[in-house]
Structures are given as structure tokens and as C-alpha cells.
Length: 76
Image (cartoon, rainbow, N blue to C red; front, top):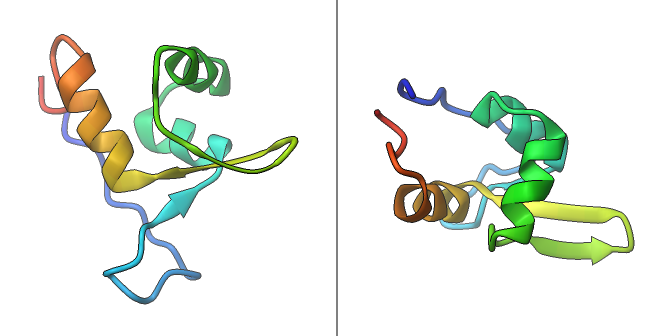
């Protein structure tokens, strides 16, 4: 897998706060489908539940989880 792009977020201007992304945004960032994100979630991908159908993913936490759980990591 090649280097992942940076995500620009208009809502998060404080770098000390987590950058929370929707399922669609994290899927686009990882270049996978939303279904794949759901599979990762079942495998332990950390997320925040904001409601019955509103999950958010902290970008730094997702990157760390992928580094630990993916065979090739983020930079392949």
C-alpha cells in the first residue's frame, strides 16, 4: 500500500483534538469501501458511537490500529 494522503478538515482547527471522520471519509482516506471499514470495525477498529447510525473514527487511532493489524502496514 502506498503512502496515505493527508486529510483536510475544516471543522478541526485545534491539532491537539482528535480528527474525527465519518465512515465514508475514512473509507475514502484508506481507499477502501465502506463495507471494508465495517469489516475492520468487527475486527477491532476503534470508533466512537455518536448515535444509532453515527460512528466517527479518529484518524490517528485508525492509522495506529492499521499499523498493528495490517500485514504490510501503511507504507507497504
